[in-house]
Length: 363
Image 1 (tube, helix red, strand yellow):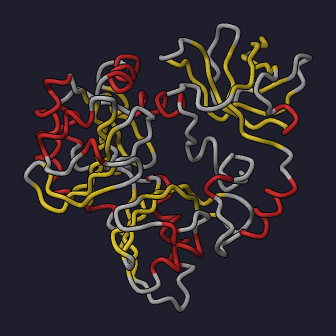
Image 2 (image 1 turned 90 degrees about the vertical axis):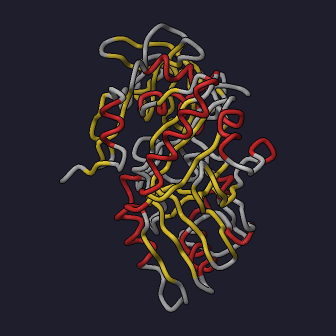
Image 3 (image 1 turned 30 degrees about the vertical axis):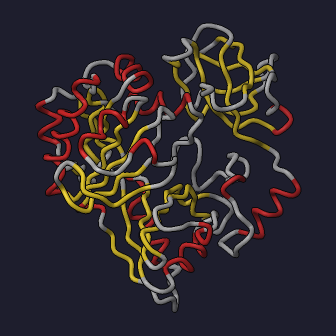
């Protein structure tokens, strides 16, 4: 498979980024150190280039009806300028992908999907259009996305726009002038739990906007941030990563996504998921903290005290904020209660852990 490059690839090379293949793209994984970049975002402000993400425009009289059919959350609850987190059920009780739904107008929406799933999602959504009056446009290759995250993000970005950034509520967006460019989507969203914004621009605007953000953010200590810190930041918040914590093989109810599963509308797998929600599931995705020293990694076995394997780690790391090992994984429902003792098998050792309520970092 050919590995794609994001539009600002040469700029990241100039910045000294370590670049690795990720989700089909060459992506900056770090510029200095994961630890330094993590703390920069948690305590100040950093900028990620996440232009590998996919964007689809869905427009037409039946745009909302199509989204309602293929996604578990209820898009009729949206209004212009509102964003919704949702997922696409796969018709077999699993998850095609998780995504964001942006309502631009009652007849135009933008779907933001994971980079590794762009082609799969595009085919899946198109396969459910049927006789609906809707036009789909895959604009992924023409758009760049910058995530400016951290408690100082609004202060850093405010000089670049007339939109009142500090007044934007979480999961809303504005299409506005930004850094001298027209029709930029500025969204109060992110994957770090540190606050901040996501900036959607056309490829031809990207370099000018990146440079303007770096200049405006300089007094606030802004730094470019790679995917390494993005992973530790999202994990501290207990945010699922597609391919690790959720997949075509995991039930959204097991994964704790019942809160975005709205039975107020009819959608793919609604009956199956409603039954699971009412009857309960046999396993659940939990967060755990290590009580012993060590770092849990994906696919390490999760065990009971006698070494019986009851699950496996789906995501794990050393939390830079907490200074201890944290992770997520699926365990039998009876072991999912906070305070429950678990053990992570690291080679021939069993490291003691306990189930905790997510997120790991309390705001």
